Length: 338
Image (cartoon, rainbow, N blue to C red):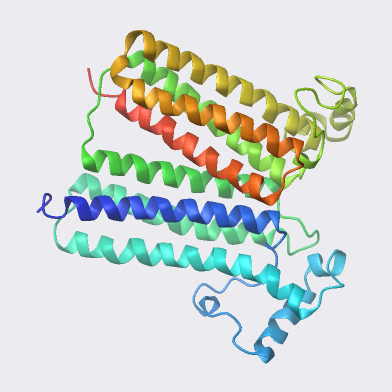
């Protein structure tokens, strides 16, 4: 039974991973176009259908007018302006619903057909609840910008992005297990991969902090921040926030995001060197990892220099996902039991 549905399950898992990545991309566009607070209600079922006539659009626009974002920033909006920002948030939520359907119905079919082992059933349940949690967390994030201040919490944004990428990584790992790709016992590479994964996770969180605090609009120079490597005025952030400045001070957050990027790049270079010298069997995976981290580093520099245009901001976020998957790939391949 397993062999009969081998490719079908593989395609299903990879389709799920691609759709979650698509969600990440559309989420990035939604954030960068300031569209995320356009839908002020969470209606998982009814909200699938967009406004279909002028009367429904009028009611939706009236609900938006009561939001802090409209009152603080967009009070000049006409209905056509509202429709433009509504589109991206609606599309983001619609893709989320489609992911649920694409995952659920094949999962039920494979389950009934007895395709899944007990271990695979547990993994499928984890993926399902991971996706469900993403939907709830997304609304929890949006809700933070609908109360007093028209800004979503950068903590909730970081949680939403990080768990989305973690879900993609987990689906990819499950897919590799399902295909039974060959593994090797290379503990040194495995240990370095785990370390890179941990540091990259922190870097992704700080990338979300930079986005949420709009810190990418600050210090748009490289390699220095303005005229200094560590701007002296960052001390004011610590005066204002105390130790929390490392999470809440825009300039401090950008500084940390920059230097963690150097750390990730250095760790990947060292891992690639280890593989090239001693473990040629993993060289293809290591080469991809090196290419992706180099491209991501350069992309981050240009995104910063050009003050985060939508295209580069979204591409930078997507490349973070690809880099994460490259780390997961080499980790899995080097983790055979000795």
